[in-house]
Every structure is written in structure tokens, then in C-alpha cells.
Amino acid sequence: MLKRFCLTVCSLLTLFSVAAAQGIFYNAREMAFSGAYGAAAYRVDAVNWNPANLGLTLTSGVGIQLPGMGMRVLNSSFSLADYNRYNGAILGQEDKAELLNRIPEQGLQIFANMGTPVFGISIARLAVSARVRGVSDITLSRDIFDLMLNGNELGRTYDFSTSSGGASVLADLSVSYGQAFYVPYFNDFAVGLTVHWLQGFAAVEVVESRGTLTTGFEGIAGDGYIQLRSANGGSGMSFDLGLSGILKNNLVISMALLNIAGQMRWDKEVQVLEYGIQSDSLTVEALINEDADSLISDIQREYTGDPFSSVLPLQLNVGIAYPVADWLLSAQYIQIMQKGTGTNKVPYFAVGAEWRRLKFLPLRFGMGFGGVHKFSASLGFALRLGPLTSNFAFQTINQLLPNRGTGYGFAMDVSIGL
Image (tube, rainbow, N blue to C red; front, side):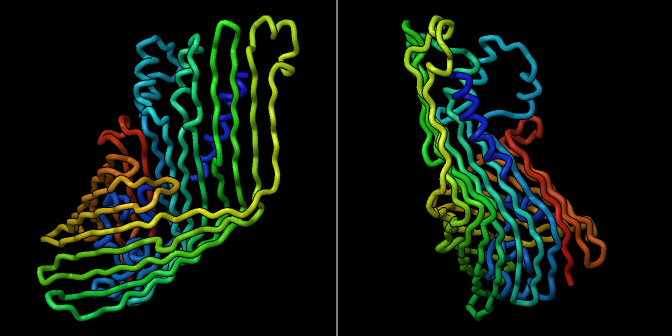
């Protein structure tokens, strides 16, 4: 029973992490700045951060975004160095204790997100963009790992109810417009609006999860239950509203609210899966004398469910950017107003820079603090050949050194500026 229950919980929840969080990076320049990008995003990039930037003179001309990819995967506890150290090793008590101490009381958290620009174009103050985005967020109870590492402790009840998860993948067609206005003390000032039409591909979430296991003198007693809800399609809308301006000293200020009234309704092929097991006083003697299946009662049901909704969390972006000599310096504050899949309400602050001395090879870096990943560091560069620009970025999470980080990000894309 124990093996069946643990494998069921782990395998079902871990499925979410392959579906491919504070924020999704759709292109490499965003990631290279670690998200310090709201006041540095122009042309098609402005769609992701602040549509008002389209109304500034900095975004004149035509910009074309070609297909690219950005993704991040991270967890709350373990690094690549940990994997290399413990993989295949015989674990002593100190090793087991160290591994468990790495896992927070709320459990091992795993986040993954993906943002793929399909195509985008901006002409003067208007931009149209098509993207695909996915996000997953799972939590595995700490007691699951305690049980696997140390076995059953007599008289102790293991609680698996903190396990949870969810994931979704959807397409986003956006139309953005920025309008310039005269405001004293500003060289440029604009307001902007983006309308998002959302088409969902798939969503899955844990509706309910519980489970306990107790080892006593009379045997092992335990129960487990998990209910999953999934859909293979849905639709929704959201809006972004922004303000941006350039002061007389060339300081750019950007502020935007994203995902206003953002909601997805999942109503295509909705299915509910329920799985549960229960056993009282399971002993070795009973297993020898009786059929094991007769000692364990289980339920497994799958049926059509009702449509359900998910919220796209409201997000506040406030950023500044300042060009000085061969540098562009930027900073960003991001506040998630509602808890959602792959996000939390912990504020996120980032700083970034771009060195422009070599026009054909700008170099970028950034650092972020807070949010779902606590700390991140990013590096990136671009190769410019005339109007064609190829961008690349790499990000480590929770440490500067890649092998010590608990997560990684990578992004690449191609754009054309005319």
C-alpha cells in the first residue's frame, strides 16, 4: 500500500512539471535583464511589459519578432551539484538529514514556465503579437521524502495533504496601442492599452489531495486520496493598461497594470479523475495469509466534469531606464496582486544593464531578488547584422554559479528592426 500510494502521488503530480513564473520571459533580452525591462521594452517587446511604450518616440519605425523560445525550471531545494553528489551514492544518516533539511516545511516546490513568441509586428504606435505561454507549479509534501529516506517511524503519522499542483498552456493574441500626450517636464509621455484574446490548449489542477500513514504495534494504517481536474481547451480575455514617459534628463519611467480582469474559462473535454486507497492494520502476517489486494480498499473513477475557471493574476510593473555613455541601466519592481499558478505575492525587484560600445555585439546582464525564485542572475548578448538581431540569454536561480543554482533559464530569439 505504501509503495502504491507514494508512487501514485509523486507520478501524478510530477506530470505537471513537463507541461511547462514571477513573470514569463518571452524573449532573450527580457531574460538577460532578469526582468528589469519595463522601461527598456520598445516596439514589439512593449506588448509584454507596457503598451504605453509604443507611444514614445523611442519606438518609431517597424519591428518584427520572429519565432523564438524562453523557458525556466526551478525548485525550492536542490541544485545540480546536489544531484551529482547524491545520485547513485549510499546515503548515511547525515546525508539523509541534510537532504530533508533542504526541503521547507510546506514541501518541495517545483516551478516551470515557458514563453514562445510565434510572431509579432509593431508599426509606429500599433503592435500585434501572437505567443504561446505555459506555466506549472507543484508542491510535494516533505513527509513523502522523509518516508522514502528513513522508512516508517513507529507511532508517527505521516501527512501528505500539503501536496498540490496545477499547470496550463495557452495561446495569446494581443493588440496594443500607445498614444502620446503632452505633459510638462517630460520630453515624451504616453498611455497605452493591450487587449489579449486567450485560447487555452490544456489545463490540469489538483482539486483535493490528502493522505496519512501511521505505523503502530498492530500494523500499518493509512489512507490517500487525490482528485485531479483537467480540460483540453478554453478561452478568455485580459487587458493591460500603462503609462510611460521620458523626463528632460532622458530618464524613462514606466508603470503598467497587466492581466486586468484576466480570466480563463476551461470548458472543452473537462474530465475529473479520483483515486483513493485505504487500509487498516496491515501486517506482515496478514500479507502472508491473505491476498494483499483484499486488505487494501481503493477507488478509481474518471468522469466528465463541469467547466471551471482560472485567474490570470493581476500584476503591477514599475520600471526605470537610463542611458548613460555606452550603457543602458534599468530597474524593475513587479508585484503580483493575486496568487496564481507559478507565481506568489512576494515582491520582485530586478536591475539590469546593457553595454553598447560594440554596436554589433551588445552585452547584457541582470539580477533579480524576491518572487518565486528569491534570487537570479542572468547573462546575455546579441548579434546584429544590419536590421537582423539574434538574442541569447542564460539565467541561474538562487546562486551565481550554475552548478549551485536550484533552477535555470534559457532564451533565444530573432527580431528585425527597420
